[in-house]
Length: 154
Image (cartoon, rainbow, N blue to C red; front, top):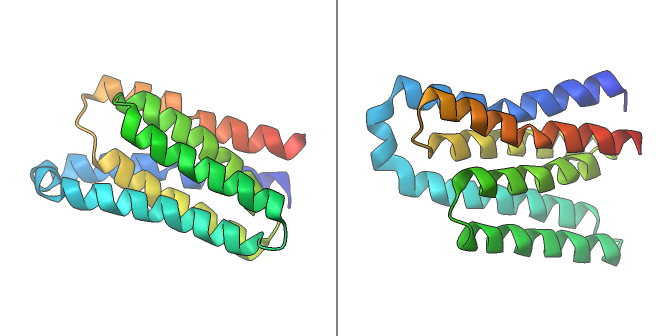
């Protein structure tokens, strides 16, 4: 895969966070009512990413064990860490790795990068922050772009 396509796909996947922030700015009164649905959708899309990667790498048991370990780690982090910024930073670091794993197959890559973008919409739609905190949140989660693109060169 060409670097430019890969890089811009990582940027577009990351922009799910920005889209979620824009949705909260447009309709903040809806956020409180939908927060439990956003939480469910966030977990659902994260699980969906892992399911598609596990089915794609079903021929290699080492990949499957690694993916299951990552999935368990993310759900453990979701339960144990209360700081939203730290939780999402770790999650997006792992998603950067999964983004790289999916780049081997174009069809899977398009699907996983779309799911990461949708996941980001739900993550940022759940947050209640001032605009300065949004900037910090986005800069901390930029680790996704760094990890995804550094792994391409290794």
